[in-house]
Image 1 (cartoon, one colour):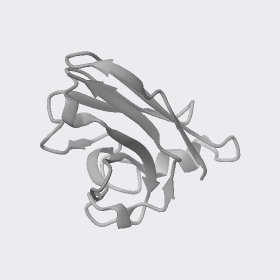
Image 2 (spheres, helix red, strand yellow):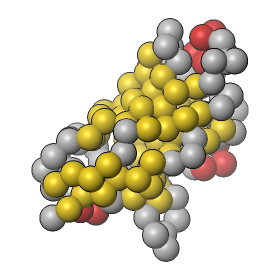
Image 3 (cartoon, one colour):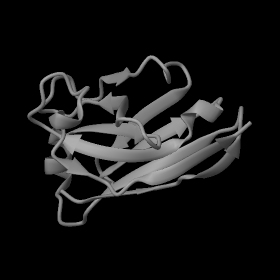
Amino acid sequence: VQLQASGGGLVQAGGSLSLSCAASRHTTAHTFTTYTLAWFRQAPGKEREFVAFIRGSSGGNLGDTYYGDSVKDRFTISRDNVKKMSYLQMDNLKPEDTSVYYCAAGRTGTDYLATTDYDYWGQGTQVTVSS
């Protein structure tokens, strides 16, 4: 599964941004549905941080979501299994949300909160929030 993230940019604090992650055309929709999809972020000098996941059919209840505490009630993760896409809607953005955001896919993880739970990664897209 190859992933391509897009949608980053520069936004003022309080604004919104939407990220997208597309799976390669070689991935079937059925296979895509089995993967739990996630977003992580990494700021300079910091470890990669979990943002959100949405479960695939191999990871429990398809469509269940979970968020990191720092983004809960501001970010929304979703997926379109026909288009083989995942999305991250980010609202009420804060300067501390500035990071490179990565999408990921996995189906053999434990709790899907760690980078090691994911087998495939997109290339990252920069999000910068100005104060």
